[in-house]
Length: 185
Image (cartoon, rainbow, N blue to C red; front, side):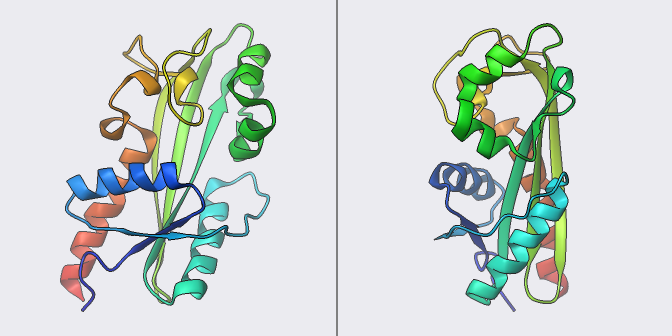
């Protein structure tokens, strides 16, 4: 039977791994890192993207894996950048997003964690609602310095985001399932 530490997080983003490791460690799951650039299909669905990446990651390692895909969905921009968030961040960054958003600043940060072990493939999601700040506030990676969660005056970059992020919610769902799934094997 696999131990709870027998799962790899596969990503080219070490910042994301550090966050995943911190969250799963608190949930009593030890995760190992495998740095790899996975092919990413173009899709409007974070689920489809994550499932495809998880299937590919499993073929690379032949061990249980998780991958994560996330998107920032801005209401005024009809959900843009959504599943294209990484490309948009690399292209125009936070300043570009701030220049695009004019009046309705509401947004949702979404995360999908996909698990694959060669037999089972399962997805877990987490969403947090909030708004786009009017300026960059705090230091951090990705869109954290411009996303203010509902009920806060601070951006994710200024908060302990490990306990309240979209990624935390999806990983918490994964951890509950994974822990119970391991007991039934």
